[in-house]
Image (cartoon, rainbow, N blue to C red):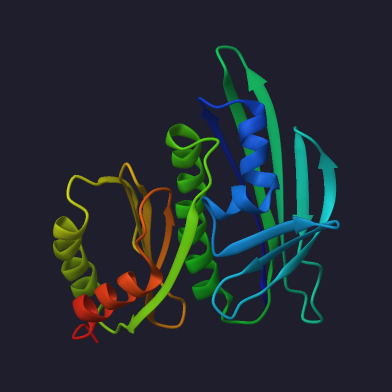
Length: 227
């Protein structure tokens, strides 16, 4: 059967039009709030997140006001498209309008759509946090796939308790059934319910030398018994 979808979000941020464009239209900018490592070049947007390496084609490019790109349509009809509209406002603020649309094939689209919707909410909120608190800076993205989880309620409770010690004083900027986002002076720390079962850490670090190995050890030690 499949499912076509479209959603629009609008945020106003205390950042310049140029800073917003840098965040959405350059590889280092996207690295600082989205997923994995990204590259914008030669009319394409490329991402590498774990073993997932999609390439999208840029369909609109009008710096610094309009950007759009999409995955192209697969043989089964699957595709996803992103559009960003940037408008400057008074007092050095900017309004960013984001449109996400696409099609999910198959009769089991509902679970994937739920994961996409809840994950997308975290990414958009992270972009807003980035533009509020770290605009103009570039993060190191850290991506870690933790243990497979069967009891997610227990896993989130265990993770919350461990993070209180790991990131004391962190500000919780987003939470829903599948995701958690925390902010410190050093960066933004995100945890996601992986679509196929693992706990995923997808962080953006602006200061310090913490590594993916550090967070792999943390997740394995904290959640290794939460199966």
